[in-house]
Image (cartoon, rainbow, N blue to C red; front, side, top):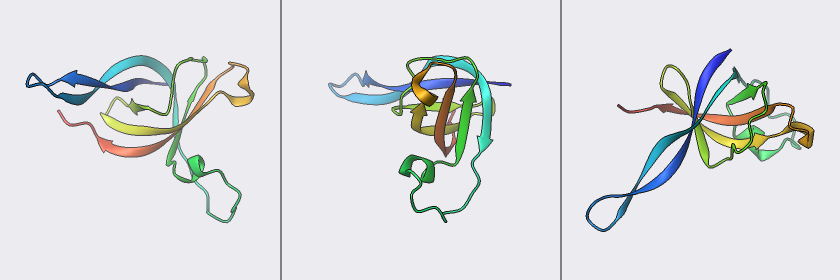
Length: 106
């Protein structure tokens, strides 16, 4: 298992009357990140899966993860969350569909 930081985007005052957005840590989780493989042969596949490149499985259910967040791994690679799933709605584990976004600057 690996450690991942779930970040949330926040508006921060820029000091001159406006705002800037900044990502800040919200939750630290342990889980497994895997590349999604497959084809587009299934036309009934949901859009969030088609747009996703990876899935993060978190064995210990963690509430509060939304598609307005992103995941950062230990190598500073980030993944934008496309869909945060609680399979069958029983709070057993999380399946977080995400899209690779690049490497965090600085």
